[in-house]
Length: 186
Image (cartoon, helix red, strand yellow):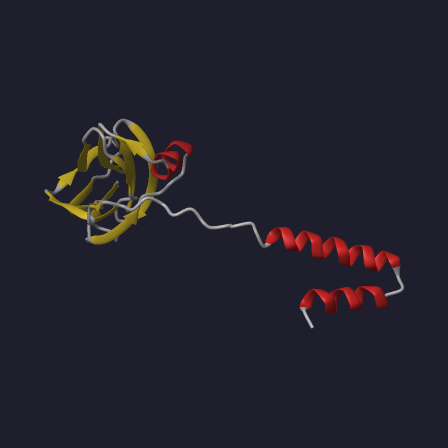
């Protein structure tokens, strides 16, 4: 006995017309679903991924005692025309020391070209002792979020820079600074 004939016998024995109508609607709708071919779209293959490129070690740099920023590292990236690309979030590592014995804090600011991307407050050991710290790029504004989540087309130039400062009357130094960054091309 075929499946359809079994289903029709089962429906005829049911006395509740509402149940019969519901079952018939369900069967007719499920029959339509058999012919719907749903597949996830296959993304285009990536043709080239730069490994995370480490740039550094940048030389030791100390801030002036007036509280102003000083550039401690930079990482320029050039993407040629006709490439589609996405930048990966960079990380950076540095060894810091601050001259203060009571408040050895420092502020790091990151920039993409001239747009401020994020700011961090770090703490070193008191009295100028060295403290090595690694930071991932902090996404604390819409521009930064949209920059790293968007796919772009070259030509494009990006200069990722890191600056450091501390409170007036103190000096902060950064040494052995490295930037790890990468780009996905297609």
